[in-house]
Length: 480
Ligand code: TXE
Image (tube, rainbow, N blue to C red; front, side):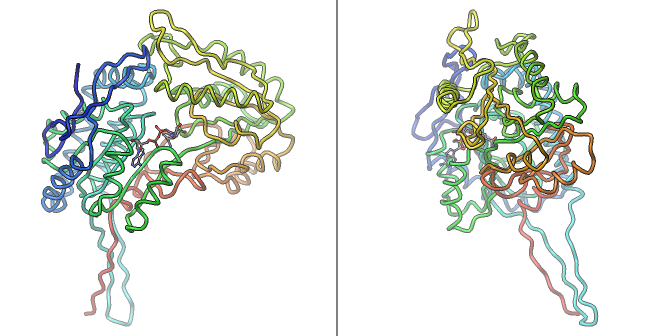
């Protein structure tokens, strides 16, 4: 069986303890490869390799770094089919999605930061009358840690490592143990692109073992993490007393506010996507749908009709809209949320059941699920499900819509559907979210700040924000 091992100092190597974890194919529930179950000693080796590579890498020219990143972007593009198939197999997502979203975005991440680093600048302040000039020197941090989740494996892995290495840092990175394959395949491309040994080290393994070792390593200066809110809180508790820089992109329970004056057809099509893309396993999915009461009944009928036409099935079939959920424990967790919601009084309008796909009977498939609720404080409205489950609730005024939307411990993104510009501005300013989409969803310009407020995390990724995170500003004050 294929063994997905670590990539340290430019070479693939097995975990020191010789322990391996089963890696499942969610579409059929079979173990299809083994992944290194690394521990603190493996992380230490990765750290040492990164430390050794740092002086040269941090002093390399921006052009040199930019060329390597560009080369990586091209190599990912060249290997699109192979990487997309690997992602679909490892994660259960439709191949079509991996081909059009995940892998192109991984390539775009490298390409974007290849350009961005050449445009990154810092400030200078002349203290007039005092014969003094200050300038801000932005230096890389040293060795940094990047920890990514399973929902968009290569997409989110590269979203962190690209700015980290572009800014001159060396990295110890860990993909999710649930979806290790594409990070493993990336290691081949790193060598091919000529990335110097030790600049990027990939450690495979679980959160509590390998992940924890990265977070608590005394010399790893910063942690960029995307994952669950509970894990983020634990990471903050571990890293904050060591004064590490932290960027935490955590969960979401995002409101989708639909007003009667919206472009109905565009809204309906996009709302199906924002509900169920990637089986609802995107932190930006609009899982709480609030509809103005005059439109509510019509929306309900039309939305359910569209949802009922979605095909759940083999990730490799062209007709598939929803593939498998990522793992058996995750499927069970999502199902338990649905059961609890029904117990709490939610009405199940569609779905809620496991799907048996012929030939793939042991896969983790679930129907797209729509529930109607009247109580905004019930658990299905408040807890992140992270699966193909959305709720519908009506509102009667803009003020009520805003109140319902903000009544959440999360604050990642929000979507507004309206043709009223004044309403757009009023709501955009008051919504407690890091990202507000108006008449669109998941429309991403990589220059924009990305991240959330409240329990959705702290810090911003994307554009120059990411380069600021991965550098330390130093004030140099010269009296002349
Ligand atoms: O994520 P974890 P899980 C949410 C979603 C999901 C829940 C749990 O609600 O149901 O989180 O998912 C590593 N030190 N999101 O359990 O555990 C882990 O190995 C260091 C939202 O799969 O947070 C993996 O690489 N690292 C989300 C990464 O953290 C640790 C995406 C994420 O895993 C660690 C995924 C530790 N102690 C889940 N423990 C989003 N915001 O997009 C775990 N890890």
